[in-house]
Image 1 (cartoon, rainbow, N blue to C red):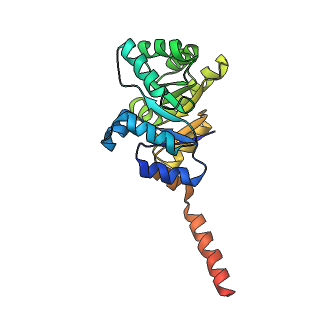
Image 2 (image 1 turned 45 degrees about the vertical axis):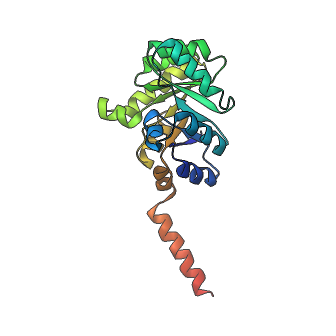
Image 3 (image 1 turned 90 degrees about the horizontal axis):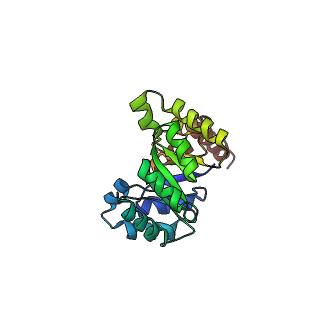
Length: 213
C-alpha cells in the first residue's frame, strides 16, 4: 500500500514529504490550474520535491496531441512521472500504445468493465473516484470491490489507486474494499493522524510526567 498526496501546491508537498511516509504526489488539471502556473513548471517542481511518483493528467484530446503531451511530460523525469489518462476508448488506445515505455494510469474509472479494459491495455493503475461514485451510484465501495475482483481474476498486475476520498473513514473503507493505494489531500492525512482518545492519552501521559518533576 502507498499513500499519495493529492495536491499541486508546493507548500502542501513540502509538508507532506517532510513526514517521511508519503510515497508521491497525484495531480489533476484543476489542482494545477489553481496554482496559477504552467503545468510543466508545476510537474518539474513536484518531481524535485518528491522522492517517488508524480502523476500528471493529460489534457489534450486528439490521439496525436495526447501522445505528444504524454511524451513531453514523461521526459521531465522518466523515472517519476506517471501519466493519468482519462478513461474512454481513445485513452485506452493510447495506453495500449505507450504503456510498454511509460507508466500509465487510467483515471475517472467508474465501472468494473472499464477496469477490465484498463488491465488489458497495460495500465499500471486504475483510478476510481470513490466518493463521487457513491454520490452518483449510491455505493462507490461496492463498485470498488467489483473492480478489485475483476483485476485480481485477470492477474495482470494492474493496481487500484483510490481517489476522491474525503475522510479517514473513506480511506480505510477503500483499502478494505480492494484498493491497493490511496491519494488524499494534506488535510485528510492530518485527520488520519489524530484521534480524540490518542489526544487524551497523550495529555494524561504529560500530566503524569509533570507530576514527577
